[in-house]
Image 1 (cartoon, rainbow, N blue to C red):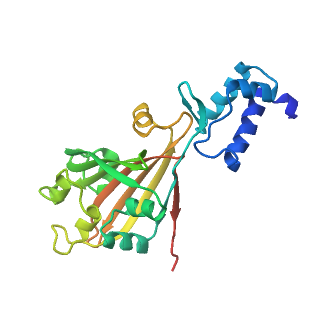
Image 2: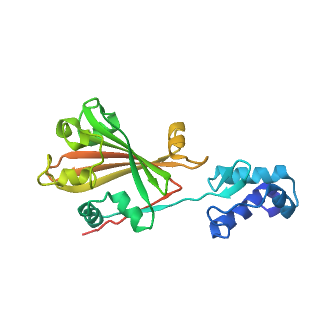
Image 3: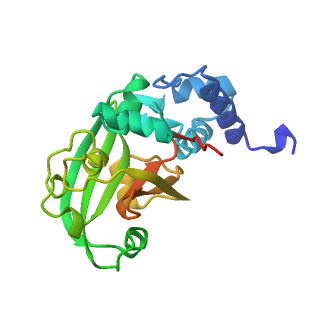
Amino acid sequence: MSDQAVPLFRRIAEELRASILSGELSPGAQLPSENDLKDRFGTTRVTVRKSLALLKADGLLVSNQGKGAFVRSRPNVQVLTTGANFRRRRDSGVANFNAEAAAQGLRAEQRILAVETVPTPPEIAQRLGIDPGVPSIVRRRRFLVNGEPMQLVDGYYPAKRFAGTAVAKSPRIRGGVSRLIEDPHGPIGQRIVQFVEDLEIRMPTPEETADLVIPPGVPLARVFRTAYVSSGEVLEVLDSRVPCDRHVFQYVIDVP
């Protein structure tokens, strides 16, 4: 298809997209006004608005009422998954996500939204190896980086193993639940020997869109992380909802 066959609003959007992706328009930069863009491309404000709407739908622009359009800032966090990395982070007493963010010069925060005992949902029960509806303790958290919501994470723990422990209480646990599980003097005393992660990509629900401030058109990754301990039990399943525009996952798989 020739350039002339492509609608003008799409050609304008592609030129602006190229400027954003190349860094010429950096995160947080304000775009020229609609009038300036109209004159630059020799078109109408209606056509310019259609171009900007396309870029907003792709999650590249945000609007500030009365101030114009801005390149969306996206503090990406690279999450490195290796056994050695997990062990080093755990021994530091700092939660793995917080440590990864800090290593990249970012400020991470975890907010506990709720701690409650619930009937275990079927998809979690399957991973925990228990019957659906059997009680589990769930710790619901929101992760933020530089003040921006990054993840919703629900951690599920069999109530029969964790009732009465710090897992069932609201305060944060130093080093995370994994450190409590592995504490030789703690209530569990088991070494974590394997993580299995299941990843699915879908569009977010309206509630997830609101909670994570997800722009239109941006998909969501749902990650189930199942933690196996030395006894063969599964003692933790993390159900994480992650916007796909602000994370980079790296898995290192050692092949013997």
